[in-house]
Length: 266
Ligand SMILES: Cc1cc2nc3c(=O)[nH]c(=O)nc-3n(C[C@H](O)[C@H](O)[C@H](O)COP(=O)(O)OP(=O)(O)OC[C@H]3O[C@@H](n4cnc5c(N)ncnc54)[C@H](O)[C@@H]3O)c2cc1C
Image 1 (cartoon, rainbow, N blue to C red):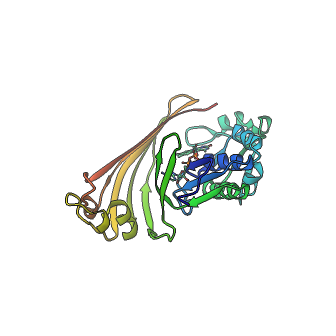
Image 2: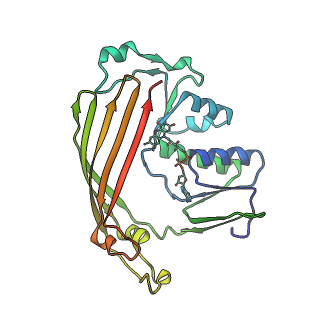
């Protein structure tokens, strides 16, 4: 593989990368896709493909791929309803999505859709490498791309997250405190925070971890500022396992996380 040359190297076989790979390979380009994940996991990245997204799929000749995903569902009616919208208001604002270009929106499992799109890229002739790690792009007149490949899935390992939360509604504001416990198997702990013998230096000695646990706490805010504008915020702190904080490549005892989104409803 290292000696092969390609017209295009795409780093990341998400929906965008695999769509580009399908189209380019179909047009006769030699395409390589480097994807980090060996199996796509559910990472909550949206399962709602908008009408204009469907139009793009049609234009790219990829609509059949979406339609082949198990349990895909074309939604043709939209009724916006949640704790802050009364049923009367929701009913009065019912919207016929079938009138839009695309004829509706698709509810489709994101990981399953990614698998189908990447499979399609292969069928169109692209070369796909799963489990590609440490991708390095060297720009030059003849650019080079190098990567490591965990071909035997040597990292392996598992992780689990347990979270409890409770929502409190104050007028247009919903406040959701949450707490969680995370577990990382020794393989993944070592992959993320360990130092192998071959990577060790005088300043950075070899370091090995067992399974690690971390706890996290935080809160989410959901504010309906007006009927059309929403603010969604999440923040939290993860307290790292002592084994992790003792690692020579970790400087802090905690990780602060934050997410802010401002939504406008069309
Ligand atoms: C919470 C949330 C909800 C969302 N809801 C919706 C929605 O309802 N509808 C909608 O249309 N959009 C939604 N989105 C946006 C949508 O998920 C993204 O626009 C879309 O996934 C982007 O696709 P992508 O292929 O560019 O990136 P990604 O889906 O992020 O794919 C990137 C790929 O690259 C791989 N990768 C990353 N780095 C490397 C590396 N260094 N080497 C090798 N591989 C690598 C990753 O493993 C991944 O497979 C949502 C996003 C979030 C976060």
